[in-house]
Length: 150
Length: 395
Image (cartoon, rainbow over all chains, first blue to last red; front, side, top):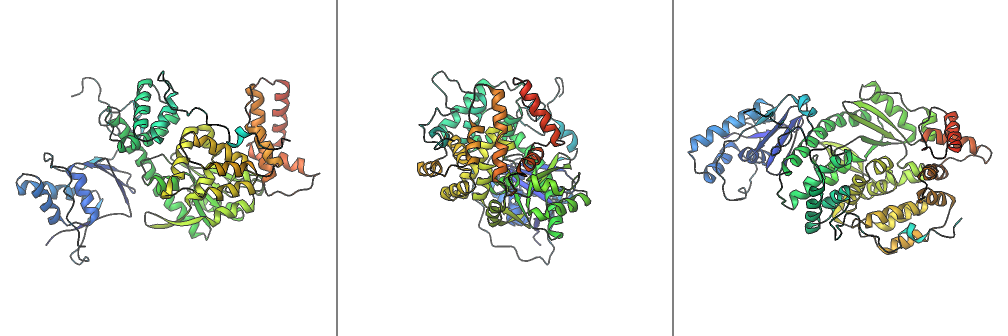
């Protein structure tokens, strides 16, 4: 049976900024982010798309083995569930809404498996100066690497 | 008393040089360039950003106001699809602001739930609805404090409810504070502040002014919970005639906020309604001065509004406001004059006392508005100023 998920809106706030989904669990204070395919999946969950629907779109978009994409998708969904950002809808949930196919968007970039970045130690991250203490390209919350760090 | 407000005070003088516009030598103040990059469109914004980047040392501390403006800068540059190595850190600033506002939002939900649970009537004003309903992104601007408008008769109970539930520290406002002041600020812990207002405007702390804002309350949504907040028009009016702390500490952020509100709802503000309120509350000159400043940043205010404000009946509060806003070469004397605006605020307040009692009543008003320990401190400040005119006025 196809699986569907919903965002735990009573405890999770999220926003998409320039192709990156950022989320926060308000009970734990943990911060998360996902870009690229991960951001797209987050958006699809918010639209009510099912797992199979998302898999179909991904396999049509990227020239990769469907099993590889399916495995990465399921792993990402499991991460979202484990961190209580989403919940899986039960079998008795209301039928899925009829949704239009997602927009084609830009030409498919090279595939990268969706990754959920998790930040739980927010106290230290909030002490970082967001201009002077962070990696220049990545910005906060990536702390500046000391010279010599690999 | 002058027959009418001086033309430059009511905005009928020819436009001055627009601040932030780059002159032929490529110079403008960095902070003004930053604001121009936020508020201007396309080519002008790009040029302002490029000029700002050329002037600013990113390895040095950037200053509180600049840091406060960076998320708005990021939003502006993103719309323009600007590519610059600084964009990575700018996005990081926006993420950080988003996170901090998200933490605050969760706490605000509990605050308003507590107020509603106690049967209190409240309206959210200030930075929180500005961010939620006008910028529509928690990443656009830090919410510095949570402002809640209450009825004067309910302010003490509201504070008691929130203090008892551990949401903020301090003592509820005493009857004297409610009589002479317009709000009280509380520390809510973890960098959050809550300001309980029992008058919508410090400069017009009276029932008629307050009713305008109560009538302008609208329903909104905060994470699925219903909330009450001011209409865009009312928020703009509050920003134009109030927000004194922000306007003094971060004038460019104040400008950016006012422009955002004036451009909100995708339709022009009802300028006539704003002008009528200001005239009724004897704040016509103040509104004209602030609108004049905003026209320098591109806000299209009709000339007819400036004429209407200029034709307002002259009154003692308007005259005192005009004196307090005038520029003087001696900055120390001007500090005393700027402070004299408190007399205008007193005259506009709803306080009705006999002529004999008024001086004492006014001294209480000043003491509370200036945050003094007692009225004797006021006397010692004024005596010190008279003995040492060159010394800045400390209050």
